Length: 244
Image (cartoon, rainbow, N blue to C red; front, side, top):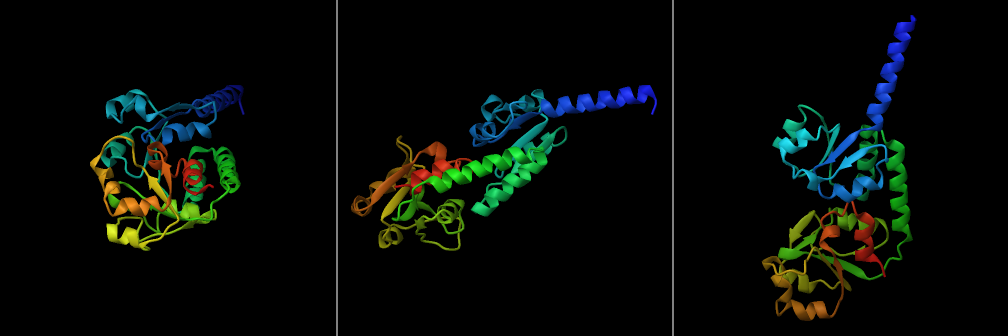
């Protein structure tokens, strides 16, 4: 190989290494904003969703190397971004197994296999370290919703030893009538996603038939930031819902 070809090869390798080292990753999902920095190497640059508001022109101006988006991101926006950059979907899991598979797939696509594997291992250890209550648990959410048996919330709790009750076995999420709820007998009710501010979605908790039922049970509250991102904050979600 001639000297000039060797020089070009070395230059290309150097440039390639620097591109990899300075990868700019942009989030389109608020749930990713605290999650990604937990496992992303410091050699990479991360831009949170609140810095661009998911506006196409702002995103293009950032010149991202990689876009991370969620299951419910605007598909027209993604189609436009894919014309100029790499966009990777991080799907919302419905099971603990899917949670692990999603991390493996994301690590492969970002060439960060070891970093995400190490983070996943730490998460699993933290979940195993939680002292789990033996009380039966039922989730209650605004607008009379509850997690069903096919939800990530229920599967996560069951995977690490918590006893959960559901009013629907074939759904991910569903609405519960007052009659259905009152006829269940959980020892603990997890109020998932209720805020301290007034909202019509919260009013049903104050129904005359429901208040005495709630008074007989231990109540746990999952704060909105954790409730809205259960997969990315699995340890916090599990701890709030299932710990003693």
